[in-house]
Image (cartoon, rainbow, N blue to C red):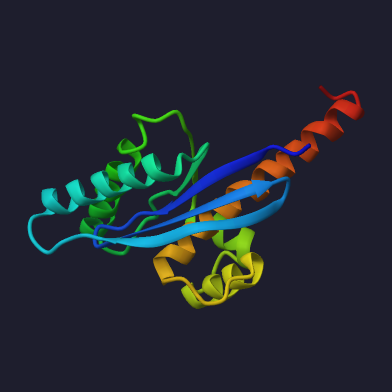
Length: 173
């Protein structure tokens, strides 16, 4: 009997934060939910509060075992990178009151795992998420990126488990 693992993927952003929830039985994903958290106009602390509260609500509702979040990448604009870092921190802190493991992946790692190239566009990620999860329609771009973060983690864990099992068989561990 295969255990089911629930993974919450998060694509943080100071204006829009995507989330996606998948169940994995072995290496087979099942779509549960996805969406976009839109931060209100107004002060930056108010936007961060919205991200924090909304992510906490998502974690509370869907009770993931694992959170897979996109790490901060170096943006062209230092101010944008700093704001992204704050949004990411708000999303991460929202998970701390729950019993979840958190894993971080770079945007290139996520795109590589889902599309096969680290330079994939948002449209390519959306297309592959629809195909991999057999969805009837394309989720919003940020939600698709969040679902891709969840898929990336599942693929990484599967590969690590296979390498670990091979290492035991080969007497390496």
